[in-house]
Length: 415
Image (cartoon, rainbow, N blue to C red; front, top):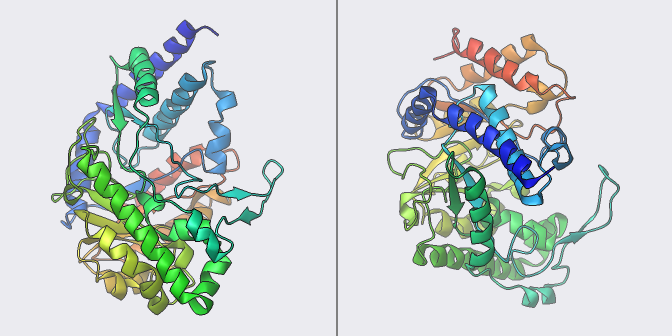
């Protein structure tokens, strides 16, 4: 297929997405999330998160299925097809009128701290064994904190090609934000990747001094990376994360290519998935005390992903700018709701296996959603379906699930 044909494919997809992003419902959703994240009473927002890292999405939108022949344009064809599919689901995700290109950086997932994270060979779809690069404490000397560096030439080349293809239809937003955001800045992920999950847990008992020193190094590296991006004027209104939609009274609304902001105007996000089995006391000592100085540099923050935090909500209340607390599938919704109250947003993540992945039982879904809403009655709750790793080939279940949940929300459990 020729470059002209590739461009035609992208432009057709961009036109379809631009139409979806311009629909009046998008502004309604912006108001909904702004009110919800500002702790005003609203209806319960619904958010679905998925991407190529999920098995079904990676297969459904595999690069080999794309029609573009050019490698870069094929990547953006996939991105647009995923965005259009998401728009068809009718959840409360805001479809913004731009497409985001991450700036090219020399450090990336897998070598953030200057060492390569490797694993054993694996057959396609099979398992593998992780090989942590800090297997001995002497290996810490090999680590280096990530500077805020952007490959301007490579970034400009990619942005130029994308703008040439669809820039008159969709704004190309270049995200120049810092590397150490989200999971790459939450310390827990990096610590487990560098040291290994089991050694990390044993270190709390056997090598606490060395572990504290490593955590202090990671904390200072993240803070320096964020400060450098801010000083360079590279913090943009899309350089923020909260695992839902980043609208609130106290933060800047997302906007394309709107840079030069400070962390205090934006959302920050951290999780502690690797610390789920760690006691609250150990969590505070070996993680939260190092996360807190990073979290509190942002305007508002969200905490948690798939880990059960029900025993740790009192501890999280010490984060002065916390606004969203995740309630994972394994958590007791009622116990979490009693602790969260109306002080924070309760981000409830029902088990995707119950919702769409292992069969599709409408009665079971209605019962689980209704029970969860009853348990969280009075809270500022939203429903976040994520980690959808298989749909057994039936992607339509997601749209059906949204419609079913809306029916439950319209019923007696909506309060």
